[in-house]
Length: 304
Length: 236
Ligand SMILES: Nc1ncnc2c1ncn2[C@@H]1O[C@H](COP(=O)(O)OP(=O)(O)OP(=O)(O)O)[C@@H](O)[C@H]1O
Ligand SMILES: [Mg+2]
Image 1 (tube, chains in turn purple, blue):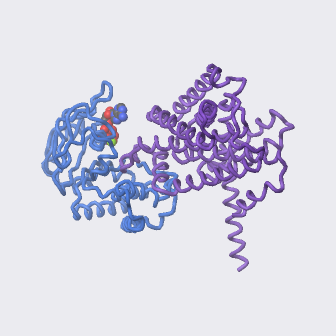
Image 2: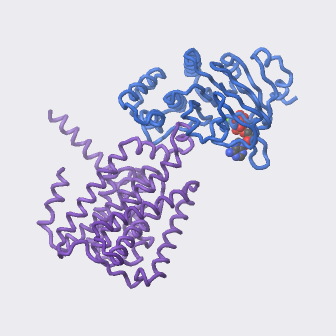
Image 3: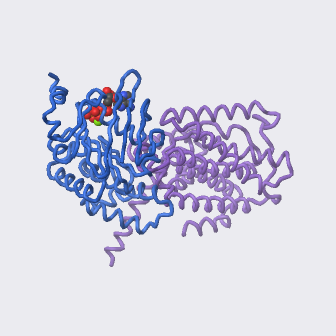
């Protein structure tokens, strides 16, 4: 609640550049939290998430450029297109596990990036595609509240999923597909569903991004992008939506703050990632949060 | 209740089951014994849909289930445990129980299901562990939780693969009681075990597998006398 109020009030205190950084951070938070649902909860360690954001981004951008439709409608259509591609990936990956799933999704991402490059007549290729803005006014605040709203709504939906029957089945599939099946869980259906739902949110993030930054290049699918999303989730705590959001905000802000160190900061994040993987299954942020809340509970109890 | 006809299952060049036929009557406990690698686990895997039969068919309540998926077979009322337990390790005991509970009842009154699983956990004497992670339980507790999970499916036929392996004697006695009690409530069992004392005392009929073939069947007394069985076990 406090965080929410702070997020609502922040624009007053920030200049345009500060707002821009937060908007991008919220974009990553949406990507990270939806990937967390896919990989952390449903156990599908896919590398195609950034590519699915690109599906949403390019679909929406090309729709607006080639028809008279408004971005308000094209962004949801782009999200549905991403969900459709997610369905296909989920279907094709049904029998793939672990490294094979990773390889397939990496291959898919690379091929999609190359296609975007090659079809420059439509996509602008590496020169970039000029995308019409979401709002006609040049107002960062408007974009800020829009992405904040999208993020909060998406998180609410994902939280509901995690707490529901669906979320329980996702986790059962992650733990042991065969055991889940013998207990009545339609594994195929829930695996595909995990891809469809999370791809929708990736597409949504991508669509917003396209109409905010207003220039799209295939670079948004580059592997380091995906690496960044994974780092955010792993550092935040792979089975925690809030952790993924916190990881995204912290890494994004740190990346800005450490901008002077240029490439060195990626080395730093890489090290952080390795340390996290080595020492803490549940990320860095989630355990710290747990300890803090436990401690304050204890303090309360003692002061009574 | 269950009829298996001329079941054959091959893995590459290896024939794990060859032309196996048998029936299980309602409310019966059928014991399956045989040396290591004789195809006992494979039999359960085929009945519950993890493997598809290469030949033959399986009928449950007179309907063919040989081509159905595992989850469909589970919903029809066949539950199973695994020789090496397969608990959802990063989920709590209660969550382990709720997976089958929610898979069979879509609308599911959550309260009633929670109540039911608490009842089963109490019966199995692991209710105090309900909020623990699966991975923090002991081997014996895993066996109990697996049984509890299966019971949440409300199955009519329960397939138990080595339920007594690696459990201490006290727990084994408890498991005997649970099986007898469930049998008293009308459940049907196929029971696989290397524990001769347990399987001879619990089963009403026994079937013996060797190298994927059914070499004998009969009452426990008959099997004890059967020379072919003795030979299969002792290897001449
Ligand atoms: N998934 C599989 N792929 C290939 N071969 C398999 C598979 N499952 C079982 N087998 C082989 O089939 C044969 C029968 O194995 P199965 O596990 O059914 O025997 P079992 O009677 O349960 O033995 P045990 O008493 O050791 O549990 C063995 O030779 C085994 O190696
Ligand atoms: Mg076996």
